[in-house]
Image (cartoon, rainbow, N blue to C red; front, side, top):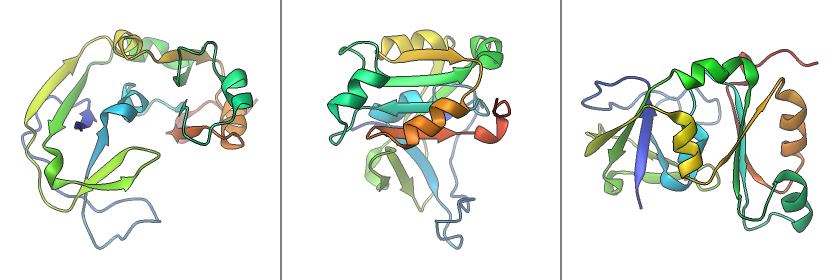
Length: 173
């Protein structure tokens, strides 16, 4: 298993635990966050880019596979708003890979791993073309005017999904 931290910062030598902002997590324990390779496409966008992502899980219905995917070869979709196209085209990301031994699974569906101690990356990769990085991973990228409709529909589906940075999304139509 491989795990990564995705950042727009190119010079991180050590990742120190931070208190989580999420209300469902213990705010007295700092964490270093990482994502597994399967779920990495969910983070191959600019950090503040609102996005709806989803992939087929073990409980995904045949109906949802037919409705939400363009072909049987695709099992992962990332959707962004069209106003983020230029930003995504011009953003460079850095993947910091960690030794997974220092991490515990935090969320299987999201692919999140956490560590309570500082972590030093074992290597760093540069991604200059986010579109190519998604396509190389057989991810379908959709670009839409507004994310709210698809966000609502995905939440009601049997898909495994992640909806990020919607505070930066265009207002509901």
